[in-house]
Length: 547
Image (cartoon, rainbow, N blue to C red; front, side, top):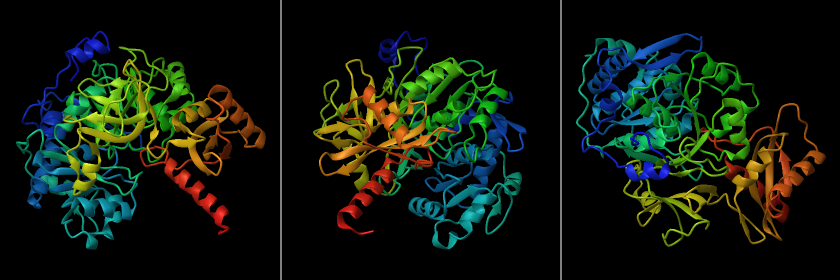
């Protein structure tokens, strides 16, 4: 945790020290520590019908003990993997805590995964059990024969298709289960990467990963927690952004979390939820923020902090956030393997547009060259984090070769390119394969997209390199227009001129394609690779004459 009352980033860093105990269990820290009979609120479940179901830490503890005992009765033991195929609802937290309580390894699974995605993750992890709902039971029914390790499926919505009724079994189970005596370095969690650069890999994390996340949650949320804080995110808890940026850190601090499934992000509904329940703290991916920008904020918002990660915000979104919320959106940076290592905190140091912020205290972050040496300020290189680090993964599940490739000496290489200035502010330029090479220039898509998104007609955009015989690549932009704006050649030229006048002649998009939507990962990140590969395929067809 961060030291109290820091004056600035320098003071914060100077006084920070990790306090990782040798023995640590997430269930004990996030549940049992607050389950003292006081009825302290842990979760507020907002159902699809608008009804609110309030869960105390006491109720959460009892339910997780009962479920842990049910799992144990089905043979689930320490080190076994437990799949959790549930949306934002209290039972999701219960399942996580039950797994940690047993010393088992939780495997969160996104509810919108199709059969192939589920089968891959369950087979790769060798999951012995899955906790799910009726929708998940139906998805799993056709997979069981190909998943010999999956012996138990528990449904929180009644028995069916070889799934047992978790609720009925929990009613008969004992209400006590002491958390396993786990080391801080014992495995607790496998989160699969989104698979934007090849097949998904299972990032294995230890119990200490929660403690490693705390400074990176507290900083962008303006020294969270404060009295009266209430957290919500539209990000699904199956992803590291929902689980370890919001749910578990909030429970660790005894701060209540709103649980609500949004099958599809609705900006009006999101605004209404935040206003109605006086939400104070929000993690909102940049894509969701851009959608909110097209809606009208209601009166009565009680927001104290808004943080965003996964994509560069850009100056336009920062300016909009100040106008809409009366606060500065704090951008942060990390990835599934090593999350929340860079952050802004407007209350402590200036936010520089286009920058992700400074290294979070306790993390050594640098821009390094091919030989693993940190580069001088302003130089473009690989963003990397030095090990050991408590937020860093233990390795990829069953893939030591991929784990080894992730490191350059003691530096975990993120695969992202960036620069760091003399004051320690990091600027994201792009993924290794997102950087555009044009006429000898190396161009990052982020700055171009930021400029495109400031045009009044543009809702969202993506910039990629298109093969070009003369320049190697040219910049091509894919643009989603705001509602009511019609595409035209004249508008395309206007947008091109808008970028050229604000950036540089070599950076403006020489081609613009108007599209209805952009390809996104399930976490809301733009899949530039899909756009880039489509362009290369078209170029190859044109070159060879094949259709």
